Amino acid sequence: MKIIADQNIYKLRSFLSENIELNKFNPNNGIPNLDEFDALFVRTVTALNSNSVPLIPSTLKLLGTASSGRDHIEASYFEQHGVDVIDANGCNAKAVSEYVMTSLLLWGIENSTSLQALKYGVIGVGAVGQEVQKQFDAFGLSYISYDPPRANRDSTFSSDSLEALLACDVLTFHIPLTKDDDHSTFHWLDESKLNSHSYKLIINTARGGVIDEQALLQALEQGRVQDVVIDVWENEPNFNSKLAQQAFISTPHIAGYSEQAKLKATQLLVDKFGEKFGLQMKHPIDLFEPKNLEIADLEYPFRELLLRLNPLKEYDVALRDLISRPDKELLFKKLRVDRPYRYEYPYLRISETFLDKFKELKLLGIQKIE
Image (cartoon, rainbow, N blue to C red):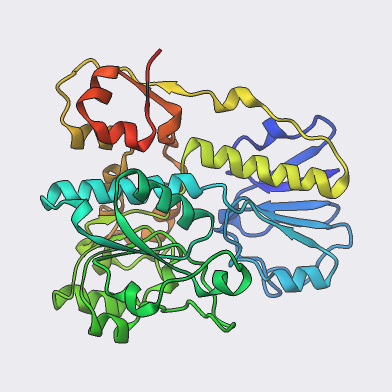
């Protein structure tokens, strides 16, 4: 069996059995020659469709993306040509939920705002949305759940009304980007919705196109939206410089980037590959070991400690530095692969002194060093 894969798919070789031939390619150089390969593995940075792959080799039987979303793939085109399409749906749900909760904690600190006094609207209650709700439950936050498509297919789920959602103080997005179905999400948050309601904070870690960025900028300038946290952009990697400058936090599509999310993405992809071809894959559990974080200064303020555990502001500063650069699109891509991945909170161990001092750390799932 022969796989050709994006060189940035995390520790892929560690999960593959020895009899699998692995070839890697640089996505910045375009789609490689696919002749003689059984499977192609990509990330969200590679668009796969009838234009980018006009000729599908007869050998190609599987196409996989190491991501939860697959809107960069024209799945129907490949499936019509006998190529199965797989993804790693849910791999980064925990990481994204931690990004949302960490952003909220930082925003609450800098605005001297009680998070428990606000109402939250969770838009999209799939794998990520449900993890966000778990975080909100842990912190005692009041929220409503909005997901009409899920309500249509899941009799056990009931979606709150659009009116109730739009009356919330904070909106957080966890929906796919769709344009051609009964529940199109393209520019879901548009000028009409933003003109009729005001918000303390809007968080988007879903896909850039679900929010009309020009309408959002206008709402920010007119004071109808106080702050935004933006991780995904309408024209990635050509991110909106003006929105990046005005946002409370701006990051380069890394909300789901954690050591564990990347490992889970690779594991899911490889396991589905194995199922397709009847092959046994590896499960290197040693890669999922927790990490002790030794901090000598026990007087560390909570904000600085939180940013050491989850370096959102480092990405924020780095992204803002790109705003005036002529090569900002290339550098945006580099930001996504050049930095070490953070550990998700349940995989971190810290001094019990900090856990006793800051109850938020326990609520995030961090445990003490044994």
